[in-house]
Amino acid sequence: MEKSLRTILTGGCKVLSILGLLLIIGLSFNISLLAGIGGSGGEIFYEDGYTIHLFTSNGTFEPPPGIAEVEVLVVAGGGGGGGGIEGAGGGGGAGGLIHEEIFDINGPVDVIVGSGGSGGAPGERGEDGDNSSFDNLEAIGGGGGGSTLTNEVRGGDGGSGGGGGSDRATGGKTEPGTGTAEQGHDGGEGFRAGQSINRAGGGGGGAADPGQDAQNSNAGDGGAGLAITGFSDFGDGGYFAGGGGGGGETAGSGGDGGGGDGRADFCGDGSDAAMETGGGGGGAFCLGAIDEGFGGGDGGSGVVIVRYKTTPALTVEGDVCLELGAEGSAVDSSSKISWIGGVNNKITVEIEDGQVPDNLELTVDAARGNKVILTALAQDFITDISDERVIDHSLIYKLSIIGNAVPEAGETFLTVKFTIIEE
Image (cartoon, rainbow, N blue to C red; front, side):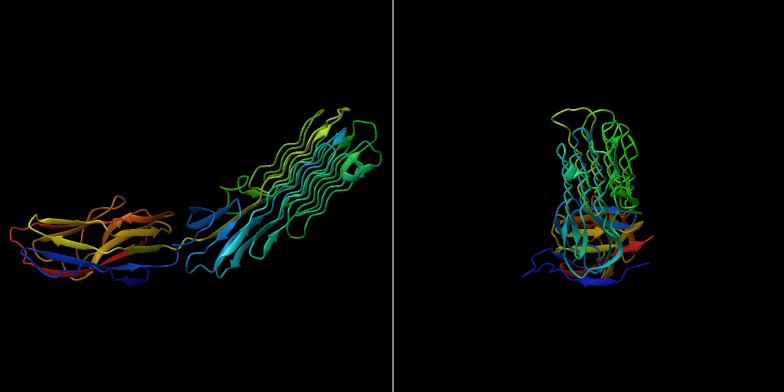
């Protein structure tokens, strides 16, 4: 199916006088022109008929002309895991996650991408992650994991809550942080039982599930993140915002979505969460009396992803002027073509208005295209333009004498049409 057409006229060439053999071919362009070219912001990908803008730092999303609805994923930075001195740190809570399949836009949008919280120093709660936002969508940073000092044991609140830590006190369970409604879940409870080895951190909450509670010496796993359909090349295999695992003699695992693992078996730091996932950091663990203690893992940075259907579009610009002298040929490469493809499309080219004089041949060529002898019939010019964007690709026009008769001097003006065809 041909797209709708819009005509662009070039300036062509102007001649004040004709001396001897001089044939002038001036071209205008009639091209298909639709929304699609012109979007900017972040790193841009083309996949399965979609344009994807990946933001891993602050920026501005500029929609292309004609795009008024986009799909948006906003993930805040994950919380850092709790640090440990003679005890276990809780896993950091995942950054809050907001996924809007249809979000209306009417112009440029400011994008903020939150950093992950630092892992807690020995005996301190992990830092909360920073918020991420797209327009009025604001995802809350994940809560830091609880640690091993009495006033730092509780997990922090956030997009998802941090897991509770564990010190040497008696009393069983320690309180986790709470998550934000519709963005994440609560962390898991820590566990402590005095002088025994039964000290373990709770898992940080994730976007899909709460963090697991610790039990005796077994730390809680981080809550699972969410899998976002169509985003499998990003995050943790398409999962985002997994909670960090708690530290303990048997450590908790980080949740799918970039959560860091807790430290297991004797003393050590928690594992960092994966970057650009919003995952929570893993909790530290130390059973022995080691003065310096150990730190929790850092939370993963957030991410903002914008996606919309790739609408095929085509532009051609630049004057074309072919002055055929006695040498018998003329070349003009001043014209440029730009396009963005949809799925399994191609570009055709033809003369729409006018005709090439007898005994002359007019061709158009390009590195990405087939050499085409321009006639009144549309011909396959550039094929396989699906899921790609090409800017300012040179077109090379050549005018040549092919017959025995020498053409008369004069001026000829043609309209050349480029069209995107959906296969």
